[in-house]
Image (cartoon, rainbow, N blue to C red):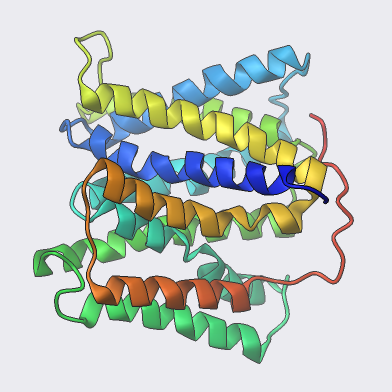
Length: 302
């Protein structure tokens, strides 16, 4: 891991994933139904990731055991978290949503303890307490939020990092059924489309893209394409430089998410938010596992 290249990759991926939050806020501003937005996000992911698989001359399996893995990933990684976060981001500041997303390691630690995949550590418990303090600072300190009415949407925003923590622990405990990361996300996106489309139609939330496009439609497509591309590049980063180094992109996603929100949406934040961000980063550092050695073995090429 020598030279500037790996750090340039981290910055590029952090900037890419970070911009999806303000783009999502623009997408939901058009009044489109949540399930309709989720369907198109999944459909666009299928197109992008499917093209990557074809270019790599890789197939995708829908064998019976794999379908259950696809189902869990699409539920915990997209359908459930986005159903709540799309509602929350319509009201909460985009930068604040980026801060909440960084809570994934905080939620992941107690789940891992419950599943028996991790060991207790006072250092990591202290990190967990810092993350909790950061959330309480945002919720309880006057003027931390632009409006007190936003408080009721904070629990909705916390569902996404909780689900992502479940997703990560599921993979850590039970694996991926033999599927590589790209195949797993592609299969999950396909299954997600078959779930989201009837739900969108049944609830009257289907979003038609065969209309004159405005900022919400462009933002929806842009955020979906960026997510699929960045995920593909993230897999490449893991293969080249190892998982431990690559996972540091989470810090940059939050920083860029806040920065993009200020630049694109003109958001500004009070002092308590910046203190909460610092506490969150300190907590993530303490909670995140520190393997003794990262063997850098490449992921499955499927």
